[in-house]
Image (cartoon, rainbow, N blue to C red):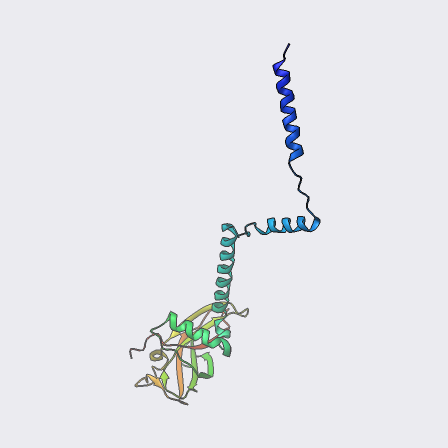
Length: 209
């Protein structure tokens, strides 16, 4: 009896055995294996930062810039007098107030605040300043600042040259080099906590006169 099924299985086993014996086996030395592994890993794509990482980086940079601008703003009274920071503040003033001329080299000479001799509940403010520049400039506005003993702001107000030179007639519009200007103001008595007074010379807001 011829068993076709059994004969077929024997033929398949023989073919598998022949193909296994005929296929050569590849042998690699240790140096060849290292070179192959290096080539494989080197062909991988470089890691790119995800969108989330880039967004966080942009956010951190934005916060850093905002914090720097806040420091420059809140410390402008003292930092604007630092020589290497003055160009930054002058440039910022020109950008923020292009219609206001920039004053420079004006020096405050005196400031006195005392009860008015004629009127009750009034304070008489007398001050003077000079132009140390070699050119004439517009007369500045003045900012009067009231603060408590802890340095916290209580009140502030700006006065134009027309206001603090109202005792003169006519009121000059320019200040010559080395010229001394004397200003006078009268204000109501402030609250008891407004114990510190400070006067600042600032760029004029109105130069139409």
